[in-house]
Every structure is written in structure tokens, then in C-alpha cells.
Length: 243
Picture 1 (tube, rainbow, N blue to C red):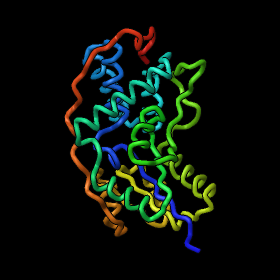
Picture 2: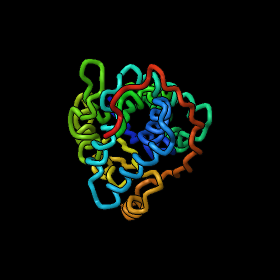
Picture 3: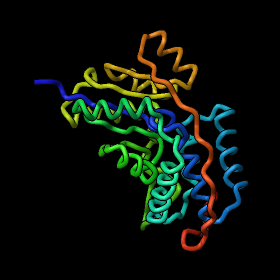
């Protein structure tokens, strides 16, 4: 009997050419009626945290403060419309990684998305790719609204490796029979946890590590242009959106 095999895919920079968190935030803030400068200010704030060495897990937590008091149903609706626009514009998916994902599915492997992004944004992508299992950062939702906090640690770094172990155990698979794909040095824990790690080019530090250990390296792809913005306002607006 053949061993059970799982293929774990990071999302941002691996399956997608752009960062889902930032591209959706831009769309979301515009839908609330904010000027583009508001998005730029918030993105720069998060980038500044990274620049001074704040751990990626903490900048991820800070990101979700942008959704404090947001109606969960509205966020889900906006995420669907955002992803549809990304697909219509083109260039948002990395062909090399998507082709690898489809090969795994054709071979009968179970594909799992493992991402620091969050379910509302990832579900449309997973549906498009025919993936059922998604392990993601989980924002806290109370009474149908985001609180701006997380239920548990972000799905970044060691949390991805833990998720892979738990998922493999649930499927009766051994991680040595599994494959993982990632594009950033923070993906090393999950890449090191599996039998077949695959890097997606883009992070020079991970690229060097992959070459040193003779891992397969898939090509990355350039980020597409930003989507045109449409300011909707109206029922999507809510009183508290700033961190």
C-alpha cells in the first residue's frame, strides 16, 4: 500500500505573486471609503515594524487590528470580490507553484494551504485551486464581528511546522513522505519538517539555503499591478477601523 502523502503550500509569494494581506487591505479600506493614503500609512507602519526587527508574528498581529469591529460577513463578501478582480486582472498566481499543486492533486496527494493570511481571504483562492484543507491565522470573531485580536499564535514560522505535524497525523501520513513549498526564510521550519522541501525563488536567504542543501527551487513571478480602486462606503463602513 502506498504511503499517504501531503503537499503543504505557503500562499503569499509561493502560490500568489503578491501578498494577500496587503492587497486585500488596500481593497478593504477603499471599500470603506478611505483615501489611498490611509492604506499607504498603515502599510508603512507595518513595514517600519519589520525594519526595526519586530518579529513577523508581531507584525502579523498588528495587521489584524485593522479589522477591529468589522462585520465578518462584509469582510467575507469583500474578499470574494477582491479575489475575483485579481483573477480577472491576471498575474496574481505563480504558474510554477500552481502547476506543482495541480500535479500533486493529479497524483492523489492531499494538498494543504498553510498561511499567515486568514480564512476569509484564503477561501476564494482555495476554492479556485480545488483545495479543501486550509491552515491559517485565525482572527477572533465575536458576535459576528472581528475583535482585532487573534485566537492563537499566527500561522508563521514554527506554527506552520506544528500545523504540518498535526495535519499529517490526522491523515495517517509520515512527514518524511510529504512535500512543502515556501518562499521565505520564515518557512524553514515547515520545509525542514518534511521529506521533500521545495523553495520558491524570491528570498535570497532562503535561495542560498536551498542551493546549499540541493533543494528544488521553483521560479517566482513578479507582482502584478495594483487593482483599480472603487470606493464603496455605505453598508461596509463601520465606526472603528484603525489599530
